[in-house]
Image (cartoon, rainbow, N blue to C red; front, side, top):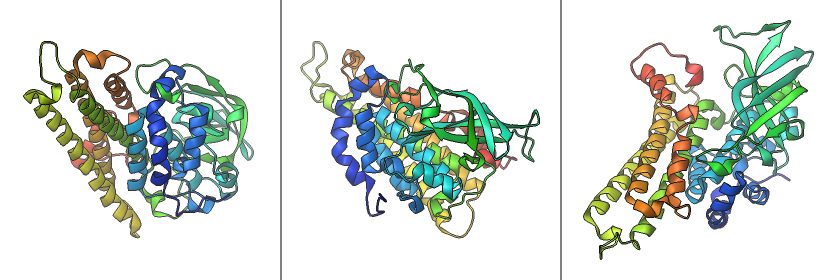
Length: 388
């Protein structure tokens, strides 16, 4: 079954949004995305937004990917995070050999996930790598049919290195059935993502099913695959933050229209300080969102041309992503404070949005260290462009 490109994932996702919102508490208790919800999301095509059209994928524009992820996250940040991980992991398909990519991605219900960080070890063995490793942060892995994990490459007892001197690291893609999933996901926020550990022991991975987003050149020629790989992942993370903050704004508006403080005849929405603070939060969200989409559109126009995307444009995109993620967390914290005692209860969306927002800020692609990375580029200092 090849999914036609005329499928618009937002149109298919919208009918599912109320269920994503309604089952947020269930996901927190289960600490994962329920299998039936994963299947429903797969059927909308949202997991195939980055998958190449040559494999029946949707190969969406970055703006569409962000808008869809934002919508899912506004309903339920954990579900939005699982959408983001499955969609962006499919970037591997653009780098893999055509035969191996078909094996992994031809089925439209395929769900992939994994971890880029090189926490594993891959030893060259003919046309294969012998792989062992354990990776943290395996979001959505319980629903995946294929997983991947970053590995350093070893040959003749020595670790291979790139010309820059950095370790040669590649992602190994393997059937989920070959992995052990460890239930380690006991956390504060994004509790419903099932981001436990993934482990493999002494498995064989064909070289054609390994990918380096730093050293390899995409096999696919579409403009989406000219987009910086880490920029695309950062877009996904910031889209979840953006949607989560939007959900918090909506939840607070509902609360403010009904809640009265002790001893007051006025609802929260009728209090001047609440009105001013809510307006400021809305302005901050709209400004960060507009900034993010402005940079997305600018870099996308470059990608659509014949030229390469310069490091300055890539750095600007990363800066906008980090800004949105940090701003989203600030908004959720402020609205949680304004909600008063009512926001403390588990029944309140505000406390969950607060926790999820501060879990999102911990991801390395939008962490405060990215400000140093982009600041170096802005100041004209020598910078390793591979991670921008």
